[in-house]
Amino acid sequence: MKAVLTRVSKAKVTVDGEVVGSITAEDTGGILALVGVGADDVSDGEPNDKGIANNASWKKMAKKISELRILAGEKSALDLGAPILVVSQFTLYGETAKGRRPSWAQAAPSELAKPVIDKIVAELRERGLDVATGSFGAMMEVSSVNQGPFTVLVET
Image (tube, rainbow, N blue to C red; front, side):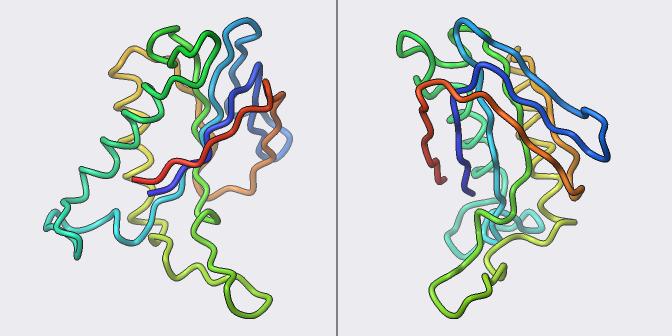
């Protein structure tokens, strides 16, 4: 699983001219989390080829998103109760080593990736965080006001 986490003062997702998710955190910052689910992150409950059951990746990702100390004062979203905007982003698995057209072969199919994204969102909410989301599979317009800028790549 991969995610790009950006510290933002505000961010929103618009679909067909309608805002479907937004966060604002002018003082402490919030997190815009673009999350991609890889084919290795999903299974039918059996361990994948790395010997890791599918729940290990999403739980680890939710923990990283909520506990990484990337906000004001080297605090985490969990420390500050900062809001998070989660947007599914299969394109993080685009392979560009050959040719001019990215290959998406390493990304999980949408019918398997959506439940994983939903589990991450649910886990973040269970941790008491305010979580907004994009619209899985939709053509989204994502806008943000970055703080810093501060962006990190997380892989589980």
